[in-house]
Length: 212
Image (cartoon, rainbow, N blue to C red):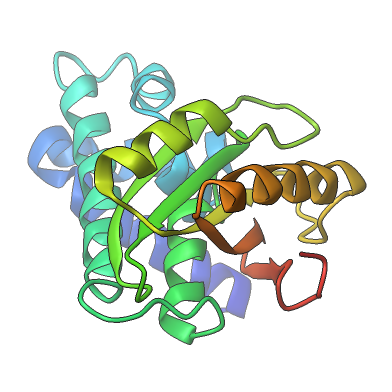
């Protein structure tokens, strides 16, 4: 068996195991259908509940439950990754932080903006995720972010957004929007620690690239 065939078999087996309580003897058929429809476990993992439900819509009364199980698995993985950020200063260059961003944003098909709110010491407080669709440039929710930072008494922020195109390098518009955002929040005594761009398994730090 080739490495590709072995990996496909492993993916099929893992997904079928998740679907088994809902699809029974048809779990492997539906797992194969999802892999063919979305292309990989990574893409299935990031798909919305509605897209998953539509892809397996003829699974009797259980297509919504199957979609909910997959989305639930994603949320569990995200919550587990988030635990690694809690209670200690956040370092955007640390493997744990990079892994979290990849888990959270790396496989999403729509462009999203993630805002992390930190204390003055850099300890994680909360995060907000904004779905932006398939835009070609990032749109940072300035007013909502400032309002939320004041509500949380956050003194530092980290921005992150994904590039569904697969290129992690920040665009000229990304850089301009980030600098504009930083100038405004820093006038309000809120520091922008970094803005990271995520594409698949790659993360680019604007702070590390000395762009901000």
